[in-house]
Image (tube, rainbow, N blue to C red; front, side):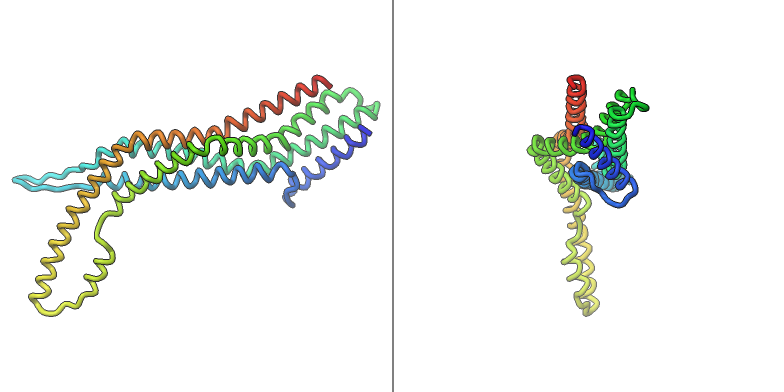
Length: 292
């Protein structure tokens, strides 16, 4: 009975592994949850990366704004250069998040061939164990067969299940921290949008452009009014830039804490918890093998 079970398990594992290596489809039940978890991580990191790059672009644009003055001599100032430390921090964090996104995408693509290869090794290990029990000519291969079974089980079953379980457990225990960090990031992104979004109201501009010009004095009056409105809008824009810069500087600590929390959550979900689950499963397998 034991030999029959070993033979069936070996042929099934080997057949499924060869089928998946040929690219005809996915039959491994452990691969679906792992692939879905990796895709969720990749999507989340991509969204965070885009938000950080938007903030980075807004801060970089704001730093280039110059205010000119002429009182006996001409001079220009860049008052929003104070945002440079915040901009540098956001850029560095965006680079780290990009690495996490690349790793998650690589895991999404690489799980299928690794798991398929693991099933092939697992099947060969079962068949080699059966041959060692039944055939005298290949006796003495028990240790190699057990090693192949352990390696194949880890690559084909435990690794994808451990990753999926680690990601699911991480999402459950870090949900509140993740929501708070994303809320902070969204708030800072809104303030950064003010830095590059302040300007002339497009509705008002369209209405002015569609107005009918009649008469010389009417056109002159409209041009003077437009110049005055433009000056007022420029001063209002400068005020909005200043207010947004003050808010961003006051939120720099919150932004730094939120980005570190996001990176920590990603590390916990994709590395630490899956590694702990994998280590525990491997240790349990060794314990069972030692008892057997």
